[in-house]
Length: 98
Image (cartoon, rainbow, N blue to C red; front, side):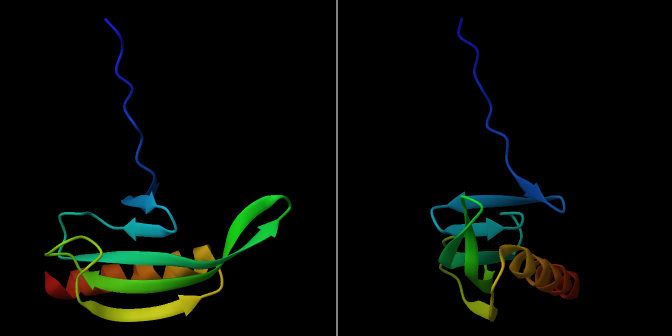
């Protein structure tokens, strides 16, 4: 019998980070809010393509994923900066909802 390989889900600070093309979804998909990061522009650094402009959106996650109402949005010039501010927004909003 052939063995079944399980795909590992990338996590950032304990929450799933899922990439679909140039869009990243961050947060638990069961939560009411999710963070959506859109890579707008890329640049090459030492032969590796890296995001140089990222749009951040804190969205409602009760309907179709990535299609909900936007509560907060911003733009950053680095994926790390975008994840840092977005993760803070998500934690703060989920804490206020609890």
